[in-house]
Length: 101
Length: 101
DNA sequence: TGAATATATGAACAGTCATTCATATAATGA
DNA sequence: TCATTATATGAATGACTGTTCATATATTCA
Image (tube, rainbow over all chains, first blue to last red; front, top):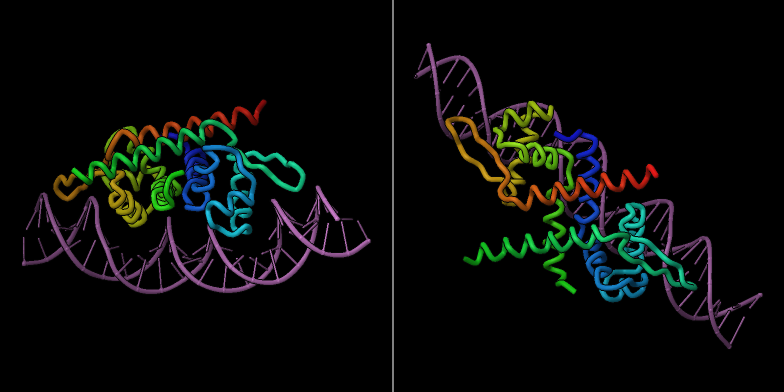
């Protein structure tokens, strides 16, 4: 059995993905890096809300940033993030299929 | 890009794992099925709190149950759950290793 | 330098959620 | 049937969190 502390950390890690705005941002970045304004426009979420969520993703080391002039580009920090999202999507798609039988 | 609705569902799915008590229960069931009382005792969480969380896991189809007399045995519903927990654990272990360099 | 654009952030508010407490339901055994 | 044991659940509460609004910071360009 893993320690309570480690499992709490694991819970915190999954918390990152447990919000519609954040996971939409991450899935969007799966395709290609994007700047804040683009993300806000594509997802139709206010610039402020996006920026707040990006900060959370940044602090969790789930995205990395690069400043180009006055714009800031965000991208996924590593391949794990992509894989976890993909696996989660597969899971709920299978769940949906099972319901349809 | 996936639909807003699907990604919100995905967020809800990850929400299941985003709580210390729930993920501790799930990780405990990774090893072997257990009844409510055992779970509460091992994790040192009140019977009521465990039962409330088990209900959430049940409704999310993440665990399944079997009643034996007055006891109710809980087990992981499918292999996906085990895999997701394992992958998440690997991720945060790697993260820890990177910090140590 | 001043205006415009891009991003970040603090405070406040509303909604969500996990635990506790008390109690209900259900099954067993005497 | 009555007491005991195992589990479930509703209400209340405190804590947490995502968005909005206003504003700050930083960069570019005229």
